[in-house]
Image (tube, rainbow, N blue to C red; front, side, top):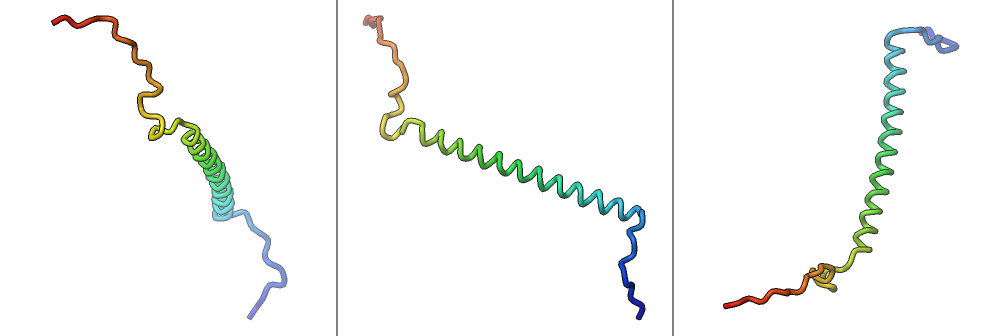
Length: 77
């Protein structure tokens, strides 16, 4: 069996160009997805913090922060 002492030099082929393009696009996609996951994590943490900072509706009641104007008119029968 004939074995090469050194691997053959990479020739310019269409398949080589496509492989390089696929590797580049996959790396770019992975970087994009990592940035999106980081952004989603930041948004989730902010939403959780906003929920914790909001008034507790079970404790304060749903009408505590609503201004109800006093009635000034009288109803005549």
